[in-house]
Length: 126
View 1 (tube, rainbow, N blue to C red):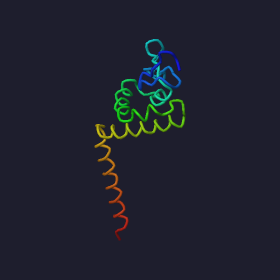
View 2 (cartoon, rainbow, N blue to C red):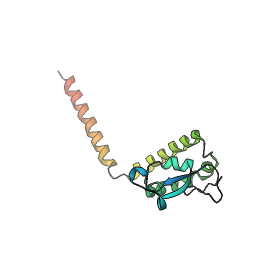
View 3 (cartoon, rainbow, N blue to C red):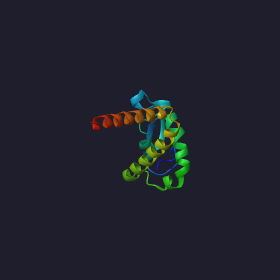
View 4 (cartoon, one colour):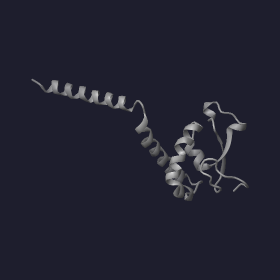
């Protein structure tokens, strides 16, 4: 534990503190004001997601799971993978509801299925 350390994302004070890039290095993020302290679990869950996106989706996720999340061992890879999966499922649930292209994807999939059915019916006709 580092004196005065609290994870920027979840507020935990236990576990290994890590430096997290608000703007990921892969997206050109540098040092200085771009660095915040986070627990290993939050840092690995965030990965290369953009800061604003992660925070806007992680806060509701944390509100739903705070007690169990904070009780988990933030340094355990098994726990980190478990919470990464949980957060990914949370994102899928919430993004599917509001994704503007989702209805278009569904219609495209339905039209492809219909085309396959018609082709199958045409092949079966004598």
